[in-house]
Every structure is written in C-alpha cells, then in structure tokens.
Length: 402
Image: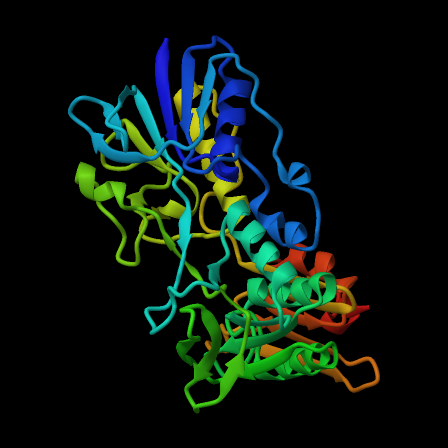
C-alpha cells in the first residue's frame, strides 16, 4: 500500500482526502494527515459565525472515516527529508511517504509596528483566534475595539462585535477607502455612510502608527498617522495573510516571488513526489487565496494520485468574487473592478437615498462581454452577473440589474 502524507488539515486538505477516498477504488493509498491545531478540519470561511455565537460544532467539517486514514492533530512538521522520503515532526519523529501534499495554508499578517505584540492584540485566522477574540470582547470593561483592516474580514468582524457582543468598533484602513481591492471610491463612500449609521466608526486613509500600552503592559488603544488616538480594550488585526511555505527552506523547494510553494498547473513541485495545494501554493508563481480554487487543486492532485482523474474545473485562478454579508448591507464585487483601460467601457448607475443603490459594470470595447462589476444595494443581480463574467451578455447591461 502506498503512503500519502498530508501536511495541514484545513478545508483544502479535507477536500483532498475526500477526493482521494472517492477515487481510490483499489484502496491503494494509506493516508496520514498532520494538523497543527487541536481541532480537526472546520469551515474557516464561517469563522465570523462563531464570533456571532454559533457553536464550534456547527463549523466542523464532516469527519473522515478511518478506512486507511490517520489524522494527527497538534502535530507540526518541522522539515522534509527529500532523499529519505520522510517528514520530520517538531518532536523528532520521522514519517515516511510515497507522496507528500503540502496544504499548510497561510498565516495572518501582524504589522511590524510598536506594540503589535502586546497583550490585548489578536490576529484572526483560526478557531482558537476567534474564541480568544470573543472571550476578550465579552469581558472588555469599556466595550471598545479597534479592527485594523477595512477589507471584507475587518468589516464583518466589526459588525459581529457590535451586533452580537455589544462592542463599539473602530475600523482603521490605511488605503483611502474601504475594501480597496474590491470597490471604487464611489461605492466605498456609500458603504462607509451606511456602516457609520450602524455605529461602526471608520478611519480610512490613516495608517496605524502604534499600539499603545497601559501601566500593566496591555494594549489600551492605538495611535494613527495623524496622531489621532483611539482607546480600545482589544485590537484585532485583519489586514491580510502570508503563505506558510517555511518547509521549502528545509527541502530546497522553490518559492514564488511573493511567497508560496512554486507548482505547475498540476500542483506539482519540481520534486515529482511533492505537491502543494491551497493558500500555500503558487501556480506558476500566482496564488489564488480563495476556497474554490483550493478545492480545484485538491481534485486535480487526487486525480493524479489515483489515476482516476475526472476533469475538475480549470485550474487557472478564477476571477475574484467578494460578497459582504451584513444584515441590510448588500455589497458585491466580481472580476477586477480596477481593470479599466484598453478601450473598456464603464457603465455606472447610481440611485440616491433613502435607499442608495450603486452599480458599475466594466465591459469589453464592444460592450458585449462583462469583465467586472461592483454592486451595492442590488442583491438579486449578483448571481446573474457573476455567472456572466467573461461571457457575452444576453441582454442590454442595464436590464441585468433588475
């Protein structure tokens, strides 16, 4: 029996195991999965639901049956010995493999600023992270929080803290407007107005200078670039991630310029026995960073390992799509909303208060193909437009917003 060793037990690794089991009709693979967390695989994209009060058990993914599968939690891989085809754990145990899949994911970015490591500062990536944030919010004497990062995760975190834990949140975004990767200034301004009415205090265009400490050494607030000081019982960093690719140095595996194990379109590294999938993988140097492409990678690798490849969706990184899910706030972005130029046509539709709505559609030079879109206040249009990205429009663009 062949030995498949998987490092990491997140959503992508979980999908890989499911795909291998469903395709491996001859039961040729014995699978060992190493996970650093104490939890088995869970739905990471639903972590904000846990912050809102959903039970941990409701986030758990379906357990793997024990047919040729061993899952080891609280186990960290420290090195790869390519010559011996072994992985060395942090405890010094050597685990052999015939095929090795790296699914180590990404780590949250903590800015290299004074005070960023103080007690009372939190990152947002794992179930334990979210549980710690929730406990801090429940016991915060002043019920004040600063969320660093005005992207999708930061805004959802701010609303969850406000709505479900009674915290007064401030959101700090270094860019000039909220959700800078997904929205244009006009849409971001409408969004900011709506969030401000809900009690979320926004500070865009003001980078964080430092986290301030109190006499007991815990965080008491932050100072912004313009010397504005915001008091806080907890500071939550939600401003990006970096791929966890440190095992590359132990095995002389190449990494992409911006991080991530460098793999080809089949997710294989230059070592034919080693693969990488999910947030830690860079296909021809490009990372995807979303769940759907990670699942595509898992299906592709499983097909190669089992010799039973049902064609998965294309592995080229999909057009990005983002939906902000807050009660009463409908914001969506799809494709690259900043891809204007080369003769593209932009159509903008704006409706003022009391129920503001905004839409920007970016079309090809012939106005036949939808390249990108931004929607605010058009909840029913999102599924229709998302399905049309890169395709010829079936009707005039304005009719698609109804």
